[in-house]
Image (cartoon, rainbow, N blue to C red; front, side, top):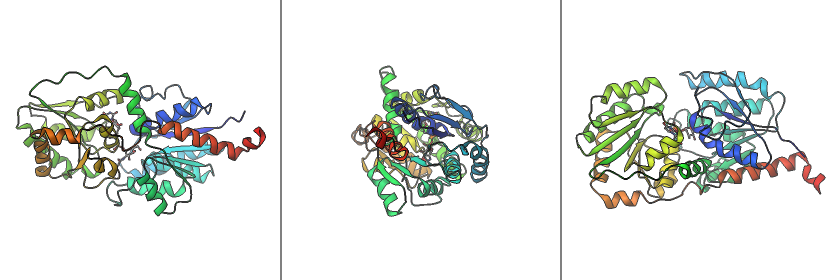
Length: 370
Ligand SMILES: CC(=O)N[C@H]1[C@@H](OP(=O)(O)OP(=O)(O)OC[C@H]2O[C@@H](n3ccc(=O)[nH]c3=O)[C@H](O)[C@@H]2O)O[C@H](CO)[C@@H](O)[C@@H]1O
């Protein structure tokens, strides 16, 4: 039997979450992948993402402030490992680790697959540098797994040379699997409005965070509103937001959570306020309304389905959007309809099947089998 050598490059928490189901689906088909951990996020919860049973190698590249320099650092560390020419390198999303993985694969002439291909905000500054990184990865990939038809259309418009497949988003697979293992939702305390907040995007580190703090101060003036602010692993951002609103009685700060903890928090909230990419995919599937702290998004499907709304980063706008929804249960319920614009939880299986077929054709094993 043909034994493929497949390497998954993983740098950050969301990459581990989204590639967990892909690794498991490949494994279930007898294609046993291994992991290359770049070190961008040093303490990944591999067990929580179902990745702890796969062989892994750590490059030990600690994250650094300049994303372009980090790409170079990971490229230099990774390239020697690809000299032995594995059959396929898989990267996910748009991080520095993903771009470095793609560049190293191309330099070593190893085929490249991109999970979550085709996302575009059409603005190179938002998100920066991710919009540039995802375009560069897509231009090089042999296999492009677009989560939605819209993402596939973006790729077709750019005439990327690789094969485009619409598969759904493997993050939805991860979410469904995690949710299945959670205990039943806790009963809501009457008279309380629970707001879950996260904010970590680089574009929002300066003025954005000040505006968000200002908005939360206005919102927190209403005693029935309980704010749970989940801090990002980046200690600088965590310290800044705590300094800005740490004095408010109805704000609680949570340390970065495991994926299961985060999904439980999302599910138990009345409303989410976040600039996260992945949470824009998860909120519709959980049926929790999400106000997006961005002016533009590469995930328009969540806005089109009515589950997510862009509110930008002006204090006034954010606060009034939160308070309007708190005062309008009908509008809140409309945004909280459970829908699946990013896939139905079968993305990883589809991706694994396509990879299996593609590798079989490349290795010529289909001819031998015939
Ligand atoms: C601009 C942008 O959107 N960038 C990307 C970024 O992710 P993104 O902005 O989604 O990064 P986040 O750090 O928000 O991660 C989101 C994921 O982490 C989970 N979570 C969040 C907080 C927490 O304490 N614990 C926890 O497990 C969420 O449930 C979600 O699954 O990297 C992803 C992986 O390459 C890409 O797909 C995104 O396109």
